[in-house]
Structures are given as structure tokens and as C-alpha cells.
Length: 115
Length: 109
Image (tube, rainbow over all chains, first blue to last red; front, side, top):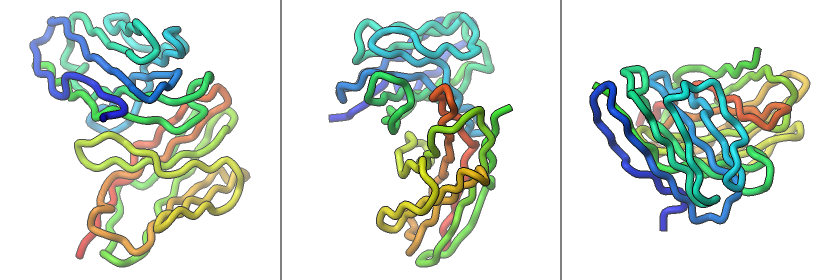
């Protein structure tokens, strides 16, 4: 069974559309994250949730809205997609009550291409 | 500001040894991580150092010097499957991971 799974793995869409990426972890971890990896391969934290509560909210356009229905799920909804949103989005989880105190377990990534 | 520096690309020969360096400048420090990322795949955890010194784990070892803001990842007996990007990341005082851009390691036969 995949520990951190995200869907879809590939997403191609037009500018201006709204899309969602879903993430689920079956590791029993308390903390989940969304990262964006751009063409230069930098991993940038976007959001972090601990037990369904928002912990980290980096400088991200408010077109990006995370939702955590329970601690095993963290979904990412993006409104009014722009060309610059094209990237690979990684979901990750980590154990513990504090974010980033342990190793991160990454999902396989969702490659978003905005045309 | 906070910054992680590591070489963009390195080339090594199968069976040889390679050392990938990383220097960091962060607001506080709670440890240094190394991750491996194969092309088109997710990063996977390799090592975590918070105390000075060398941590060995099979063919891979990681070293940390807190006073110098410096770490390296040492890969021995290189195999073709070690061709990947190696990401250095430092945990700052707010427990936020600051990532480097990664070092692309190319292994030649």
C-alpha cells in the first residue's frame, strides 16, 4: 500500500480553470504538507497542517486553498490557474505533534501543466 | 536571509566515491537532512544530522559541522542507480525546512 498517495499524477488544463489535487496518507501521521517544486527543482513549502489545523501558510496567492477534512487527508484547490502555477506539487507527511521534527514522507507528486 | 548552497551537478564513475557538499545559513538550526530524488519521482529520506560528526549508513555517510554551517553526503562504491538529485535541507529555529536546489549526480560506467 502506498504510504502517501496523491491524485491526479498528471494534470493539464487551461489558464483560468479551477482544479484540485487530493492527498491521503495511511501512516497515521499528525502533520501534512504541500510543497511546490518548480522547474529549477527548488522545493518550496506552501502549507502545513497538524491534526486538521493550519500551521504554516507561506506567501502563496489566495487562489490556493488547502482543505483538511481529517488528519489523513490534505487537499489542494487552485482557482483561476495561471501559467506560473505549472510545477510539480508534492504532498508529504511527518509524525509528531510539531511540524518538521522528523523525516518527511513524500507522495509521488502531481505534475500540473497550465496552457 | 536563509540560504542553502550545494553544487548544481557532479559526475562520478561507477565504483568510485563522491562527496556532495552543502553549506547553510539559517535562523537557528535544528538539524540537517539529505534526501535523494530520482528524476520524475518523489524525494526520499537519506539522513538526518543534528550533532557534529559523521553518521554512517551503509554505502552512504553524512557529516555535519555546526560551527562551520557545513555538511556533506559521502557515497561509496557508486552504482548506476545512485544517479539522482541529492537535496540538502536545514531545519531552522521555527522547525521549517529550508531546501537547497539539489545536486544532480551523474554516474558514468
